Structures are given as C-alpha cells and as structure tokens.
Length: 571
Image (cartoon, rainbow, N blue to C red; front, side, top):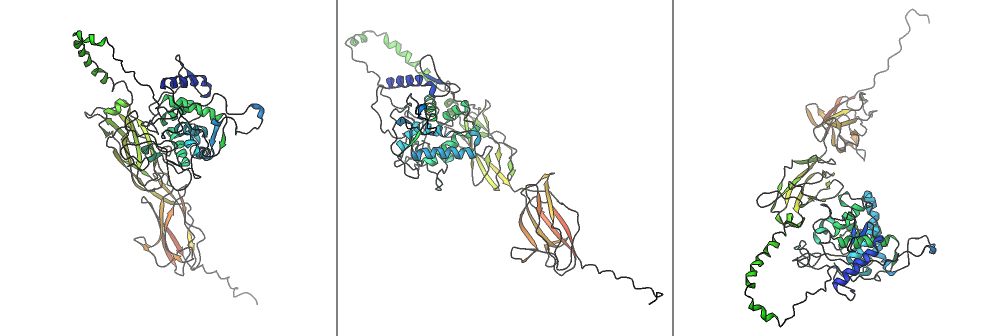
C-alpha cells in the first residue's frame, strides 16, 4: 500500500473501527450479500476464503488497504434529472480521474474479449483501485498512465505484516531485503512476475502504470474459471486479491457505489482516503505505581505461582494446529513427485498426463491444505487449460496437488513446469515437458485418376493427398514433395516433370508444406519437359508417412488414318 498520504486526523483506533462497522451496517444495501451480525459487524454470505480463494497472501501480500467507506447517498442524480446517461455529477467521491477511469474500462473490455465467461465489471477494478491506492493517489499519473511518484507499501518484514523476503532484487520496490506492494493496484513483485500485462501497448509491463496494472488485476481476478456475475465467485476473487473479510466488505461497498453512477474528473483532482487498515493508536495502559504494592512482597506464597508461567508455553503449541493455512505450510520440508508420467504432446494437442506433486514434512509425512503453485517456464506457448501459465492448487489429504491439464501450443521443443510451495521458501520441483511436431502415419491420394501429360505440357490434375495418424485426421503436419530418380533412389530427378516457383523457375523439391485442418494437402500444378517416360513423385510427412505417385509423360497418340477406297470401286 502506498505510503501514507492525505491522512485525516485519526481518532482512536477503537472508535474508528466501531464507526466503520456502524457505517458498514447502515450501508449494508450497498454491498451485495452483506448483512449484519448480532454485534453490528458486517458479514458477507459465501465470503469465507475457500482453498482456492487466496494465492499466498494475495496479489498484495496482505498489505494494508484504505477502509474509507463510500457515502450513504447514491452518487446518481435524482430521477428528475432525466439525462439518461451514466455520468453523474453528484458527490465528489463518485468522481474517478480520467486516465484511471479509462484504464479500468479498457481492461474490462479486453477481458470481455479474452475471457468473456469471467464477466468482469470495470467498477470492480475501480473499487479495488480506490481501496488500494485511492485511485492512484487521486489520479496523479502521466498521460500514459504512469504514476508521477511511486506508490509503495510497507516492507513485508513480518513486523505486523506478512514476511516476504525479497524476490525481485529491489527492481520494482527498491528494497533488496524484503518485498513491498507496488503501484496503483498494489502488486507484490512475486505476483507481478507472472500476472504482469502490457495494458497501454508500449511494449513494457510496469506495475506503476495504471493501464498495465488494471489489466493485470483483471486477469488475476478472472483466473480459476471464476464467473464474477456469481456472487460466490466474486467474493472468492476479491478475497484472493487480499484475504481479509474487512477488505471484501470495503471493496463490495465501493463496487455497488460505483455501479450506481460515477463521472470523470481531471487527473490529480481525486479525493484521497485517510483510514488505513494498519492504523492503530491503541496504547496498552501502563500500570500506575500503587502505594499498596510494597505490601505484596510479604506474601511469599506468590513465588510458587510462577510455576504457572510454564503454562504460557502451552499457548505456543496450539499455534500451529488451529491456523488452517499457515500451519500446514510451515511444516512442509520438501516436494516430491507423486507419480507424474512422461509429459509429451504434439503441437496443438492436450497433454494426456498431468503433473502430480506431494508436499511432505522432513519425516516424509504428507501435508494437506498446502498451496502449490505450478508455473510454466521456458520459451513455449504451452499453457494450462484456460490459457494461463500459472495455476495454484491446494494439496488434498494425501498431500497431493494435481496441476490442471497442459495444452501444447504450436511451438515445438522442451519447457519446464515448476512446482513451488506458496508462502514458504522450499526448493521447487521441476517437471520437463516436450512438445513434438504433429505427425502422420498414412498418406493416400484423394483421387485414382491416372496422372498423364504430353512432353512440354502440363498435367491436367493436381496431386492431392490426405494424411491420417492412427486413423484420425492429421492436420498441421509438415510435408515434403520430391520428384525422385527411382523407387530405389530418392535423390531429386534432374529431368521429367517439375513444379514452378513464384518466379516460374523449375523446382523438383517442395518443402515447408503442411496439411490443412482436414488433413488434406494439394500440391501445385505439375509440368513436363520434353523427356518421356514414367516418373515418380514422393510425398513424405513428419512421423514417417510416405506416398509414391506415378506420373506418365508420353507423346500424344497418332491419329488413325481413314481406310483407302477398295480396288474394285469405279472411278
């Protein structure tokens, strides 16, 4: 979260919390699914984190956020306004700086194209941007969307925050010891490494740029196949960004507020939040020295009670057991392969085998409820199902996490899938995968018409073949066609039929051919020189399919002469 700015005079933390709770209770209608419990605190149906709800400490590393709630009055003008437009001119809180608003809308539009099933509303990005950085500090951004000053959260050194040692060598956050959340959407460097996007088309992925950060946030919220039009998935997505019930309630309140209307304001004129979640003015009262205390030394029996201090050691034991997520993670010593088979697929196909990883303690005992992050590494266009290059899966009771199915791209070669424990510095486990070229094992002609030509002429029919592999259509298979010397000599013939290149020159070998979606390959037109005879055309494909086609070049048959008149006929 950004360094403190525009902070209002803080009242006591207790009073602030109570006031916020009261406002949340009064404005329950502003947040879908928000209700109030018996103590006046706001609650949300389906809001509890699920095993896939948070990734480590979320996109922000559990950094603090702004808890200011929207005004209770709707930002939309009264119905009598009759404008029919969506731009309101009411309360200043409804105004969003122009560049920031544009970034949110463009990111949501891009997600509608790439992941239409996610149904990401731009107002959700606006709500998160408000809570994370006050809309990039009131819209203090350049024309291309880059923040004028860096927006950095506190270092995540475990002192009141999560403990996240440096992962970027200080490149993004300027801190080579610990990580810190960066930019208007407050990504920690380790999350930005895989979530990063180029939202403004400048060829860079910069967490300090609102276009890049908003698009990255949209993809982050749309992973795991979530449909944000469903409240349960909406809650899971928000909790995955920052796993806090207060965070969820605050974001939902702003989401509903922005949905009721907003308007564009000049960059740099937005209102700044003041109530941060890590504000804490509560000071433990120190005991005042009482005159009666001197009399207490006369009671020697009290030294026997210090045996009870041994009981304080018991609270330390329960700590690993009750906490559902941290405790199992803390016990992981290493990762083991859980029987993953060889990972090979043809280009464009799905891998039939999936990666299985088991989390274990130092004694080799399986650890359940641990998040394992699978990351595709290397020069490849292979992805997990759904098009993502990163997936986080929770281990089951046997300590095993099974990665989503891999889908090969068109790029052949090897790549790596790396499994790591989320939230713990344990050596990762690498799985090698290979994408091979598409192959065919059979080639046949699609016609049985004899291929004949006169010397110096052209063949009337083009050669067309169909490729299959194990009986199935073999599409996208590389092929080569060569006019060979003989059945036993596959070298290129120097006479007889030939193809023509783009410049009309004679060519007797064609490379770079590929079957179409139906496994078909039609060769260019064939021509004949003045040499007559029988010639062979050989077509080979990746995978070893071979077809030899016979071509005949012969002179045209002589026309038959009419019979001469019989000798006995009269003149």
